[in-house]
Amino acid sequence: TGLYVQDQINITDQLQVRVGFRYDSFSQRTDNRMNNRSTKQSDNRISPKLGLVYSINEQFSVYGTFGEGFRANSGADFRGNAFAPNESNSMEAGLKFDVLDGNLQGNLAVFRQDQENMLSGDAVNPGFSVAIGEARSTGVEFDLAGSVDDYDFMVSYAYVDAEATKGVLDFNFGLQINDGDRLINVPEHSFSALLSRDIVVNDR
Image 1 (cartoon, one colour):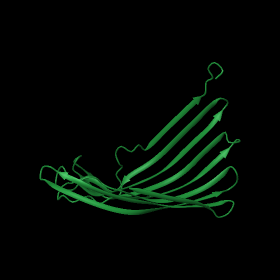
Image 2 (cartoon, rainbow, N blue to C red):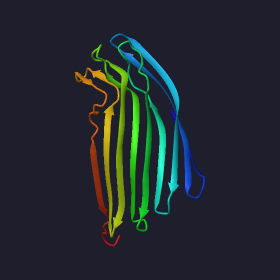
Image 3 (cartoon, helix red, strand yellow):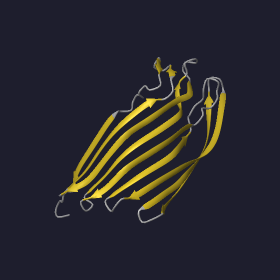
Image 4 (tube, one colour):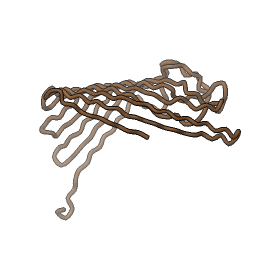
């Protein structure tokens, strides 16, 4: 169950403050049918969010945000205990622009996110997991959207440096994960582009 509340306050004609929070409450039960053991867990948390937007002029503005995250980790460890919830905090700062009479909009941002209590393979008890993983993602993202004649386009690029910040032995892969090792399945560079055009058929 979740509840999210947010308010954006105009401090001056150029400065806006965004304040919000999210309340999360969860309960879960894990049944191990091999040993007829059930594990129950419930928890709740308030995660704050804060943002600032400063308009340099009608075309350019700068912003910064900070927020915390909280979600349940499913399952149980070797002893049948529920995992501690995954927790995260993130920061982002950037520049937004809207030029050429609204025909070109874009965003350039730098960000960082830290996570803890990520699930990792249990080196002592194969086939089980432990909530001891920690990781950090930092990077830069650029988005551009606009219109040229009858065409609309969107272009996006991101560089992400995702790394472990705590050494663990991942039994699932049989490898030691050291502080600073890159996370798997997180691309360092990603790019996407979309070009579209409306076509008139039978004057409709």
